[in-house]
Image 1: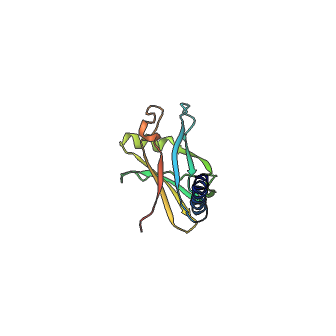
Image 2: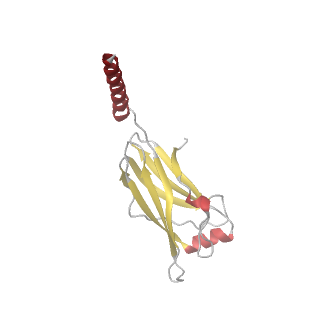
Image 3: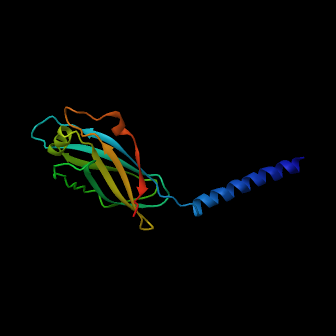
Length: 165
């Protein structure tokens, strides 16, 4: 009877070891989760931007390249005014299991115009995998101003998806 218990325990340990070896050596996954971490609303009229901080988490086991960040209107509009976001932190390599905080400076004029035109914003983060595939993490946001604070859906996480060609 004791031999069967020992064989059972040894078999279970071998199975756990094989499964662990598979996941550490052969199972490769690209996964990025992003979330709006903070909005810094400044009521001072001399400050011409609102700071938005986006947290990126590489939950996969492969490195990712964060190449660019863009913001535009969700729909086409009469306005051609779109800010060009300059983020010192990108391009950047986001190692497996690593976190990164992207500070974005959004012009108040752009956000006020989107609010007046009742348009939502599309935040796009362009990511490349080690295989060279372009991925996109996209989030629709309501424009945030001093008089129009963020709403609950804006705080929900969003993930990257493969770009269809």
